[in-house]
Length: 263
Image (cartoon, rainbow, N blue to C red; front, side):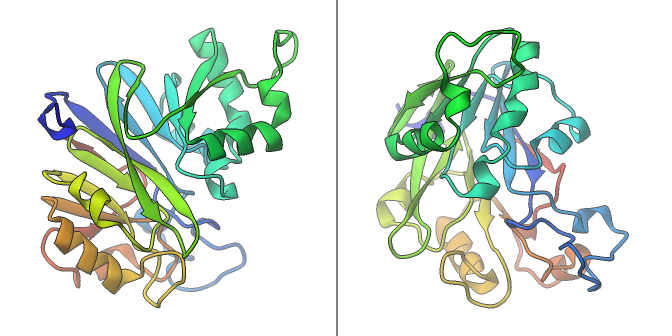
């Protein structure tokens, strides 16, 4: 069965629509960074999928605590990791409070390379037989590829280029896909994106970048994929939310923190 044929009601909330530094940039006095429009305040990249009573987070951003207080949610049933860059994993320590609420370990999913990196960089998280008197995260690792089961939810990995020699593993659940940190989507991956209702797509900035889509590249790819609606994510302070949305083609908008869609 194809993932687009599965009749799951899926909700996706943008926890962070921003680039690695977040917006406002520290010390920047540009019009976007000093804006009073909350849609111009962008935490680091992450989203929350809610399906069949499960809360599945994509990446543990350094802003995870703030994201969970703002949304809010207190249960994480699983984490899907796209890759190991700091702005996508360095909030892993924040999982410890979710262990308290869950009363157990949190399953984390990713490629072997991603899981191996997490174990090497955060060894204290993966110690066996953790003493509960120490307030540290507790996770269970799952190495996955392709279409896999995540706590009873079918998830499709979407491999994407992130520069010339690096691959991010993005995710589709039902008819919603989250594609962060990419500057190229292979044809085989595009086939896995057919029939989307909502596409969240990296559109970093206006000028070209060597590992992310810029605005025009993102628009072109969005139109090729043909989702009913595309939201651009991983955004810098290039974009004033309200002003840029007026200029975008039909069916394409800037995402913002707190945006929720359902399909």
